[in-house]
Amino acid sequence: MKFKNRHNLSHDVGGRIVWESRSVAVNCVVVCGNAVLLGQRGTGAPDSRGLWNVPSGYLDWDESGTEAVYREVWEETGVYLPDQKIIINNLLNPWHVNTQPDENRQNISLRYGCVIALVGGEFPILTSENSEPDEIADLKWVPIKELGNYKFAFNHNIVIKEYLNLIKY
Image 1 (cartoon, one colour):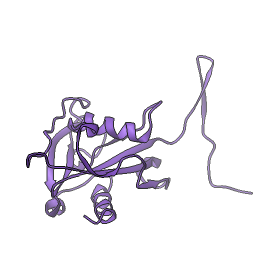
Image 2 (cartoon, rainbow, N blue to C red):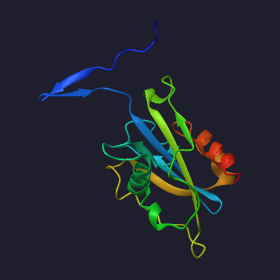
Image 3 (cartoon, helix red, strand yellow):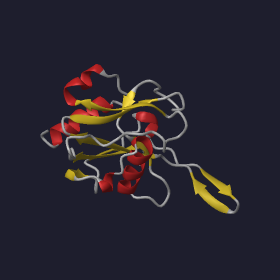
Image 4 (spheres, rainbow, N blue to C red):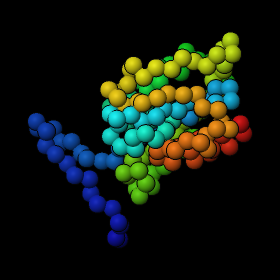
């Protein structure tokens, strides 16, 4: 049988074999009221600077997808999801998994989402103080009806639309 794959490379690191393999990225669509949580990629981001995206990042060692989502949303926006009143919860398992090697540098993408409540009519306060230096240029709760006015990295405009359709929002 002939397959199109190539074997993952391995490296001896101090007597321990470490394998090169594809990375796993997590994305989280966070909806609150009539808005979606977005970050603008800053000068410290490795690519797609100036474009907008939902909170995203890589799965770390010894971390579940849900734990990675909680961490990434907190690091990039200051919103700690376990402290929020969650109305629709798609945080325990991804609502979509993308394994296509021709998309986004061969990353495997796990998509999560949730709808959180407006408490006292106020959106959660946003801060990028926990993120990598200059990774985030701006943070906003963007009204759903205004999403078309933004330029997105990683096709996150499509990801948002898919999630909104999934939850019939």
